Image (cartoon, rainbow, N blue to C red; front, side):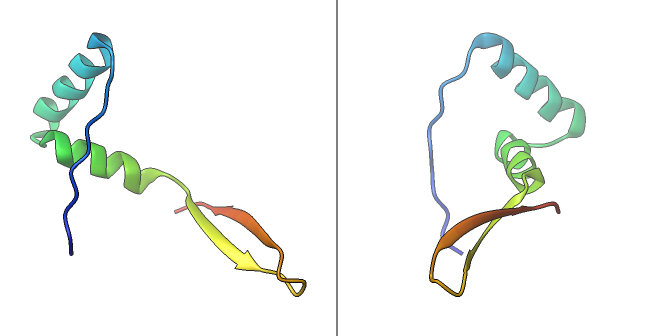
Length: 60
């Protein structure tokens, strides 16, 4: 698995909330963000008979 880095901007309130959550759960910021991403609905792309593409959201 290849690891990627990314940088995000957020206000102080959200940063503090993220840090507090991580500390309370014993998680790193990476683990907090990964958990959030994993909780998102998956986007599944399917081709119809006419080869049109559409997005279908599924719940985990």
